[in-house]
Amino acid sequence: MTAVEIVTRWTEVLRVRGFDLVQSFDAASYNRSPRALGSSFRLPEFALPKPLGIVIAHGAALWQVLRAAVREDARLCAAAHPLDAYTERVVAELQRATPRPSAAFFSHHTDPVIPIQRIADVAGLAGLSPSHLSVHPRVGPWLGLRAVVVFAEQYSGESEPVLERPCARCPGPCLGPFQRAVDAPEAAWQRWLAVRDSCPVGRDARYDELQIRYHYTKDLSLLRGDPPPTH
Image 1 (spheres, helix red, strand yellow):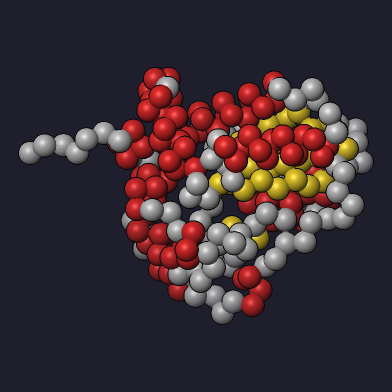
Image 2 (cartoon, helix red, strand yellow):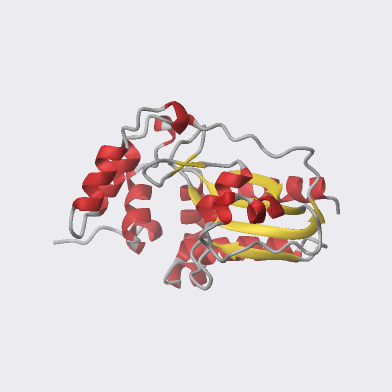
């Protein structure tokens, strides 16, 4: 199975599963990048000069797919963190179906902590904004970075991905809301939402209200579609 076949297959399946933002890259390029400084984490290279890596992310498209999966699967419905469990399950299924060794790293894991925003920047998926948001050139800050997978297969790209960086020409409307969120003791999640809302990129890709509340509050009733309480 070639690198092109791996990327094509993974992209097709991930899109159906709700992960509509996928970027392939040379995993070793992150390890060599200044973005890797300040963290001890390095991606595996499988003794290859340019191992194939894939960053897995999503925009608003994941929400309805995830809600359907939770409704249909009792184990997901009962999970403490259904999104994390769903992400790991989808990636594991693809790994089993791919005849190449691979290593997966998830943004929700803390041992080790994965600098996934820096990896996504080097990979060419989403750049880092002055307010520490990842900003995709199409969906802006309305994305979730979920996983990085590295394969024992040579990356076939002829050149490094070129990332469009809208923040480079932006006056920085996110900085005011960001500072207010940082300065507020025990800032409510709405203050952090205001940072995202201030970004002029990808406004038509904004999550709907239920998805926003779920990502910020982890209220499982929003995901499971529980009926509202009666009074």
